[in-house]
Image 1 (cartoon, one colour):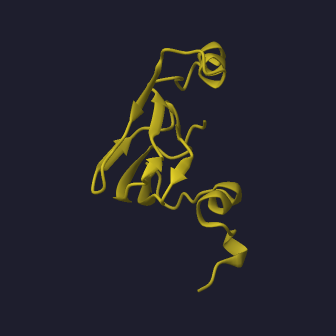
Image 2: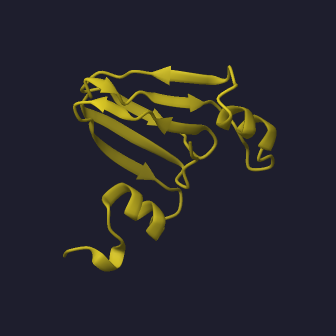
Length: 114
């Protein structure tokens, strides 16, 4: 489970996995003024009825505001899941941090090939 740093993202599912890979989220888990730790703990403990599951088909487009809603993709259990993810910020020039870059792309900025 995680929150995003970007304002929102667009996720285009290019290839759906044969098993697993569902998108789970807890809508409006926090706000700018309230981190809502009690709700976050409920979601993390898997004891919350606040979570929703979406099983998109190949070609589905998901627009999501992950800064305020906890979300995750369940593990792929069969086949592969291929997505194109675009993230958007209000301020120009904002870049993802090294941790996120490594998580998404498997390498940091200093290791990027030009």
